[in-house]
Image 1: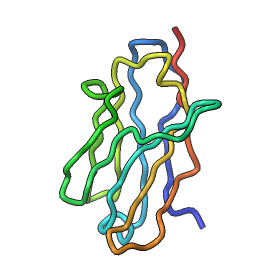
Image 2: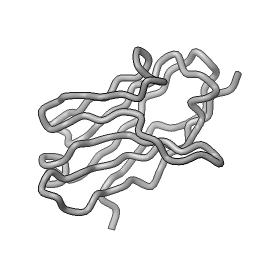
Image 3: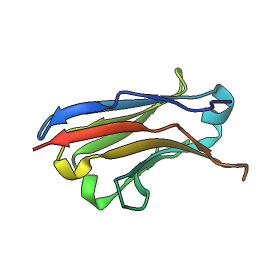
Length: 117
């Protein structure tokens, strides 16, 4: 069963922008900190950005000032707006949900982002 449905990845030139979306059920969305992780070839998966149910955010230092995470409670969707993209942002991006009730985490299937120089 697919709990998180991602969209919006693709190819872009350096300096360009992309927006990722991740939709889930109202139940999961309402009780979870939502986040985006990424994993480049040969690298560990790393947190890119996260937003709590109270809309507090945190970002990896490498994306601060360029990426913005937001959540739309009416659509049960979390977004990652990525601006000023760099080749080093190339990775598979994964949506993540961490329920505050201590239940199991959820992961999306991943969406490829490729930034060419």
